[in-house]
Structures are given as C-alpha cells and as structure tokens.
Amino acid sequence: MSAKHEVSAANLGLSPQELELVQNQEWIHLKNQIIQKAIALMGQLHHTLQESLKGWHLPEVWLQPGAKISRGERYEGLPYVILDFPRFFSQHDVLACRSLFWWGNYFTCTLHISGKFLQQYRPALEAHFEWVQRHDWWVSCGQEQWSHRVHNTANYLPLRQLSQQAFASLLQQQSFLKLVKSYPLQEWNGFVAFAVEHYCQLLRCLGMAPDADNLQTPDSV
Image 1 (cartoon, rainbow, N blue to C red):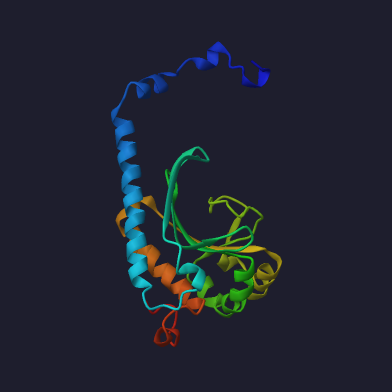
Image 2: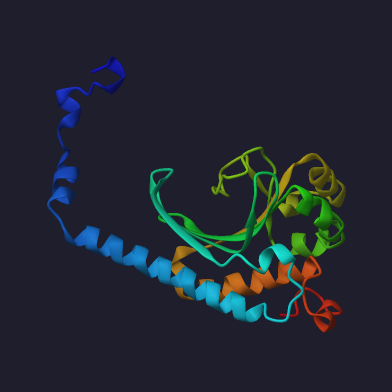
C-alpha cells in the first residue's frame, strides 16, 4: 500500500461521540426519511411549476426535457437533493432553473444562464436590474460555475452591492450568470410556494410570460 493510502491504527479508532452514533440506528433512519421527503418536495415543486408555466412563451429548448431530480451524499461532505426544471444543459450553453436542498445549510433557487442564452437575455437582464436588485437576489461573481455555496464565499454577492453599470460589466465579462435566492430549512413547508413565485418573477423579466402579463410588473404573479 502506498504512503498516500496508509492510515495509522490510532486513526481507525472511534471517538466517544462516534461510538455513540455507530450504535444508533434511529438517526440513520431519520436521515433517510428526510432525504425521501426532500425528493418528494422537489417532485411537488416540479408539478407546481409546470402547472404555473402553462401558456407561457418558454424557449423551445425547454419544451422537450422533463424534470431531473438527483441526489448525493457528499457536497462539501453533506447530503443534497437537486431539481433541474425547466432545464437545458450542453457543453457551452445552459438555461436552467436549479433548486437545491442542502443538508445543514438551506434551500436555493437558481436561474443559471450561459453561452448563447446569456447573449440572448442580456438586454432583458440589464433592463430589469433595479427590480432584481430590489428583491434581494444574489449574483455569481466568481469563476466557479457549479458552486452552490451562496453565503460566506467569494463566488456570490448580494446584487444590492452592485451598481447598474457594474452589473452590466459583469454580464459582459462573465461566460455565465447565476441569480440565486436562499431559503431557510426551518421554513420547509413554504419552499415550494417561495420557489414558484420567484422563478415566475424572473422568467417574466426575461419576457417569457403570457402577453397580458408582460404588460405588468414582474411582481404580478
């Protein structure tokens, strides 16, 4: 065995806290139950968002792919569940709404745009800057396109900290844009309504709402 894979005997022992947990089945069962509920919650969000967007002028790339729900155990060492809907991902172009449950942290709602879609929607994003800023969205400002940690990181900033000129420069310089809102886990039961409301508002900013709604403000849900 190489030195890289060697583990000393001392490191194989369990601490008192670890010994207590390794003998306790109940916390694993509860954890698994919570993950299943998070998956079901994302399924409910998919259904509700799909119903809410009926009759909207959605881009063609969103008309075929269905929802994708994925899960994992080790995003920064913690379990997570992700819903991608509506969604389009290719090597260079992304247009997607990504919803995340991240154990021990928060939920997030993210509008992820890159490549040709960023070019297409840049004028609408600039035109609605003041509205998006006023509604406390955070914006990606780093190079880590797939980072989901919003707070206490250099990858995101509150949009309130940027001027309209700085936002326009960001849209020109970056190859991708992510607008993100976090939502506390303590408010679990309200997440679906929160996500649908805020996704619909952003998609109105992009001009996707039915014609009558496009004449209203993004706040009109």
